[in-house]
Amino acid sequence: MKRRQLMTAAAALAAVPLARPALAQGGSNARIMRFVPHADLANPDPVWSTTTVAAMHSYLVWDRLYGLDESFQPQKQMVGGEEVSDDGLTWTLTLRPGQEHHDGEKVRAADAVASIERTKRRQPLVETLMSNTDELVALDDNRLRFRLKKKFALLPLALNDVVVMPERIAKTDAFTQINEYVGSGPYRFARDQWKAGAGAVYVRNEKYQPRSEPISMWAGGKQCHFDRIEWTTMPDPSTAAAALQRGEIDWLDGPLIDLVPQLRRAPGVTINLFDQLGNLMSLFFNQYQPPFDNVKLRRAVLAAVQQQDFVDAVLGEQVKELGGVGVGVFPPKSPYASTAGLDLMQGSVAAAKKMVAESGYKGEPIVLMSPSDIASIKTTSLVADALMKQLGLNVQFTSLDWGTMIQRRNSREPVDKGGWSCYTTSWTGLSINTPATSLPLRANGQAAGAWWRPTDAEQERLRGAWFDAPDLATQKKIAEDIQRRALENVMFVPLGLQFAPTAYRSNLSGFARSGFPVFWGVRKSA
Image (cartoon, rainbow, N blue to C red):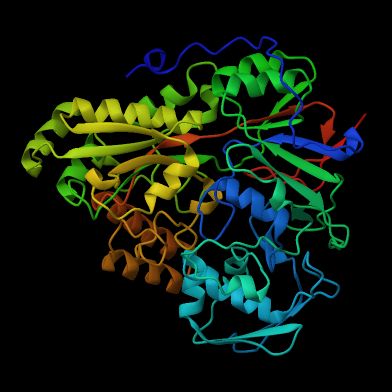
């Protein structure tokens, strides 16, 4: 399917009068950030949800024990000090003083312990850390202690995945959404002004005490220069781009690729790229429901995929430098990237049709979910739909808004009772950079919250061997085996790489180099 068949002509950035969002309230314009996220904040629990927009939200509201710097190395964040025993089996972490939750309660070690326990059920590296832990306790209000079964040097990296909530909230089951959004981060979530499908508001936490170090991605002193951050959901990308040009918004996350050349020429607008690793576009299957419980059928779809078709459809010729092909389950800049198993993606419809016939597929309906409000993922969904129909599959293209689609993904019903068969999405490069951190690659689907994929015992064994490897060379070899196994079993289909630019008014400066928007350090000049 050609790009011109997929995309309607981008609307000209003509003046379509946009009212000032109803969420805005008073204050100096220089102290208000008006932001349009790439997707609606429909599910604000960053443990329950795997969406990038929920992660962006989380960095405003909650703080973390450690944060990654621009070199992707963990640095102390909420932790003020750490003591590691000579044998490496006991880690004692001391919280830095003066930290308070938004409700005025002191941040305690018990909050951190409960948050770790909740997160371990949804984040693969935290789950691995805790499976190697004999005991995790709060020694007092300020200190928590890990007693490990064996050395685990990645402990600080794992704790970067933990948002620290008050203990009472963190005790919520990991598969149930929280109903309080209280943290100790630099902004308070104005829940009474949040409305799914419309937007959200964040108010600066005046009691937040930043660290003294310079900002480096998610680490360092998170100095915040806005009293108020207003997120406004704008599903129509042309409307959002026009609002940016007119100065009605300050920052547009993930502008429609078709509009990037025009925005580059627009006065007062800057296009930039902060992401170093890109986003891996992917196709996922419900492996518990027919017909994709049949690995032979999944392999047929894999065999038909040519990544260039997906990259071309999303990016086109004008910004083709923002894409990449020949990508496996790790981003190209990862030390674990390889070509192992990529020969299974033949890009041959004829060969794939033969494999479909040999799989025993009998024309069962396939519900392909697609988000109506995220242009790039909608595009990959359309290409996947066309490809599978070429293979003779009975595909039912089902368009939903992103929040509803994520909710439906939790359905275990058959497709004729509200279930689903497959969907496309994308994963930030940092989240899939290593076998330790990759959620879509987690062999134990249940542990990762991906109930739709059975546990793969061999992948679990390989992942364990990667952790125990004595050196990088051995880790790389095991990572090749992990990728080959993932593609043979078709845990998911890598569709190519996309780097997502961001667009903002030129009077903004001080951005942290992060794969998704964070707001500390950013300033607005008059």
